Image 1 (cartoon, rainbow, N blue to C red):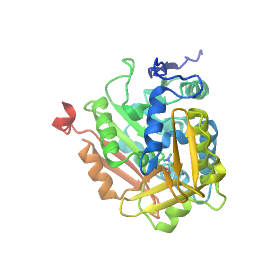
Image 2: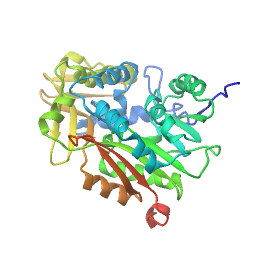
Image 3: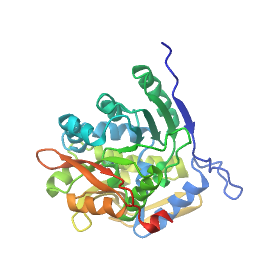
Image 4: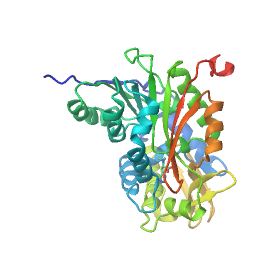
Length: 343
Ligand code: AVI
């Protein structure tokens, strides 16, 4: 039997062209240059977490998921493994499975037997990465129609016409929702509600509030891998902006901010430093910080409120025995669309 080839679509517009900015020396688009410069000149300075994930950063992230202190990945895997029949019962078979941030597609593949999706849509910022992953996946599951979409869906998901409009299941594991602030999380979930139509559902992996010591250790591990992941952002900035950050001038700081219910990662200057990059420069005093990531932690009530406010109705909730992580299923009940979201 011949194996169908998965369809790969690169749907993000190329926003690199600009007449104003001389991009010869820098490795990013004018829009990224503006975003990064704005953040680095802000008080306190901040850089969006997506810049943690260059090639080395992605490898460091993959590795830190194996750390004993970093419980989310293995806890989510265990929850799905322990509750798969129940999850499948809630979700149903034959859905159009839309995998947001699919990466190597391994998490979704674990659901294939139980959920028997009619169509699998893998969405990731890197279309090249997906192309490789889907070739193998399609040969192992020749009966499932597959589409790969190279897209930064955090700015809004755009699905091509070939993706059936009915029975869409959005799969967003790994507690990635936690890297959105509350306003962006609401916008993101409302956006999915819009793209899903009346019979969509959502399967989310979400990290929960727990003892501060556990959270602090997960983001500041004894081996220093999370620190390397965070500090590598400076190397990425050097490449993107032609900047002159010296990694040795900075240290990794991470802690649970109870009031905001989020773990914060920062890079803190060890001494006074003067950093220059294409088109700008800034002095940082000793102890001054660059905020690089927030990882929001939810409770069942705060998650329910977020989902309901975005037009979703929670219908299934599974957790580990310690209650550290949750896998949540939510449906889009007809009529649950809020007027302002539908406008
Ligand atoms: C990708 N994201 C869900 C991770 C998190 O836990 O917020 C990123 C991470 N940062 C430090 N360790 C892992």
